[in-house]
Length: 120
Image 1 (tube, helix red, strand yellow):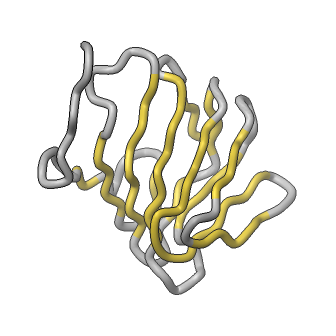
Image 2 (tube, rainbow, N blue to C red):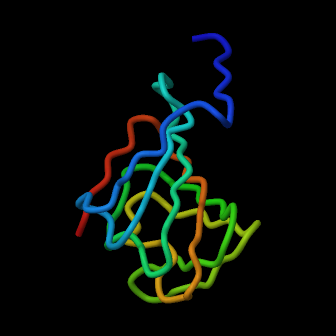
C-alpha cells in the first residue's frame, strides 16, 4: 500500500444508527481503509447514544476528540472528555459513547485489523 493520505474533505461518514452494536444516532468514518493490520475510525455519538455491551478479540484504544462521553465495563463507568483516552483489553466486556452526559461525543477507535467484535 505504501503511503495513503486521506484528506479531511475525503471519505464518507456513514450513518451507523440501527447497527447491532449501537443505541441511538451514530456516524462513523473509516480512517484506515485498505490496511490489513489496523482499523481506525472516528465515531460520532449524538447525545444519549452509545454502544451496547460488547467485547473485541484485540485491545481497543479510544481517544476522545470532542465532547463528553462515558466508557464502562461490568463493574465501573468513567466520564471521559476531549483529550482523554481509554485502553480496553482484549476480551473485556465494555460499552462507550455519549451516554447520559447530555453532550455529543466523538472518539477515535483503533484496533488490530483482524479483531472480531461480539455484542452481548
